[in-house]
Amino acid sequence: MKGEFFLIGALLICLLLFFGLPPEIRMESTAAEDLRFFSDNLGHEIPHALNLGLNGSDPVGTLYNFTGFSISRATDLRFNMTCYWVLFMQQGNAVNVTAGNFMGSARTFEIEVDGNKKYLQVTPDGVNSTTFAVSGYTFKVIINSGGDSKEATLLTNKTSVYSFISLDRRGSTVRKEILA
Image 1 (spheres, rainbow, N blue to C red):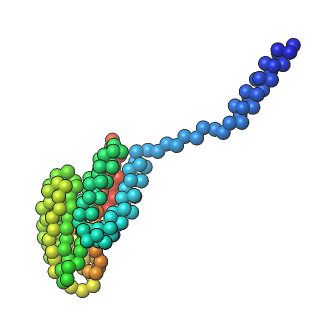
Image 2 (image 1 turned 30 degrees about the vertical axis):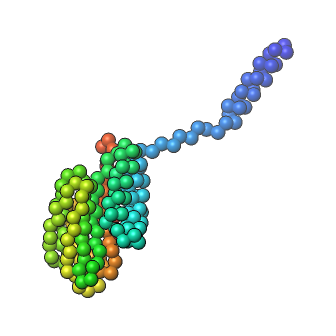
């Protein structure tokens, strides 16, 4: 009779421990959520990289290096990142326009500033620049490249950057435009 009480007591203790444990919580995310998180982070970090470059008197070099680092990090996370950016910097009565191309192939950028249009040919992982005369406090810009188009009005006394980013992994794609 004593053995039966020990078995019943052991069974009750096992039941109490089983029902007393918290349920298992699973954290799952889809590939698209991971890509969105990375693109949102880039949206915050590209303006910071530009500011660091301006403080160090090398905004083009800093953006170039940051883009290379970001692509390397995306590769580590097993997804493909392609992007380009167009940087606008005031130089007296002109604005210097520099395009950086990280799309994997040569790209032509059609840049229009206040009605004046120029074409920039940029090699893969390369940069190219040109200047436009500007007057007044603002200027209107239109950027066309590879079927993408962006229009914006920018300030002449502020360095600005437009960036297009595409992240892809196994059929999930996130595209983001950044204007800062």
